[in-house]
Image 1 (cartoon, helix red, strand yellow):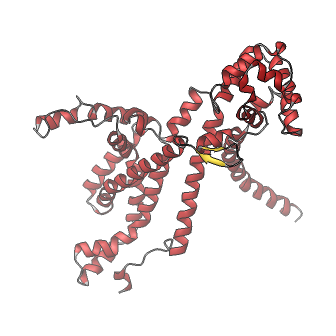
Image 2 (cartoon, one colour):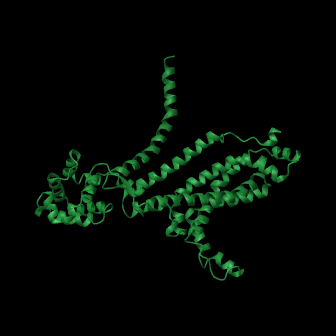
Image 3 (spheres, helix red, strand yellow):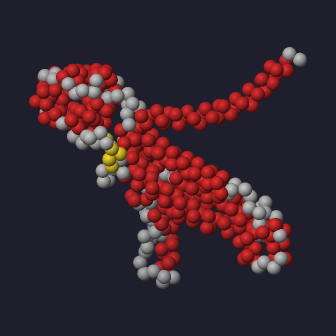
Length: 396
């Protein structure tokens, strides 16, 4: 009898432990990304004296100038160049200022007047404002650059024209995702309906086509669309042969090519959930509706279609979420104005080595997606969309 509690505890532990490990493995990358988005260790550790000064006082005085020169003297030349590059991301011209000041730091009088005499730019409050905000252990400069919201000299915040570029790219990402989702549902719904209600031969043909596409690499499918849609490709050649056009159309490296290629890649993710839901709809309901005098169109719209909306919602939501993170397909089939947010996240990681900006853009996309999911859940609860629709034929 004494072993029962310990046995129960061991069983509960075995059940809970895998879930806890899964949650931890899921949350750790998110926590890491959140930390990288505000981490400023690359700058604060290189300015220990100046960081300590500004932690006690925000005044730009002679001790601040002395601390700045002391930190610059202690840096290697490559570190000064790296620091200048980071400062220059926020205010142009600071890279040369930091490098020149560091090279001559031992000759400069360690006062504000001495710095200003060496280079008049040190008398600009905007320069010191950038330095003060970016030598702290935690920084918000990546969020400011991603959103375009920058602090002004009067203590307020503003968005200058053109600074909201990443917000516009985020909006473009959602627009492309919505276009792909709608097109996927329009194409996928009839195919799913054919599988769910058609003959065994129709089901086999459609499922084979869907699964073959699903099993093929994304890169292969995307490259195939490049071959088909290019100006001297098969589609343009076929249209010219039919005398429908006289010169090739620009079907690739634009929004059209991006949407078509992404739709082809994501089509199985919409079809399969709709098939699963459609197969649960009893055929007897449509028969009952027809026996009560409803025509085939009315039966479909009032009996069958409302019950299939759950599959449409699942398939559409899956496609939309997956489309937001696409990188390879838009990069190969789209133009400069068709790249999605993931392209710039990858660009910051591979080329700029700017993990802070990559993390902020990732968080921005994640927050928007979570916001949409929460909004959808609230709307379902408010309007009762989570309840299964009861067709009128069943009520009759």
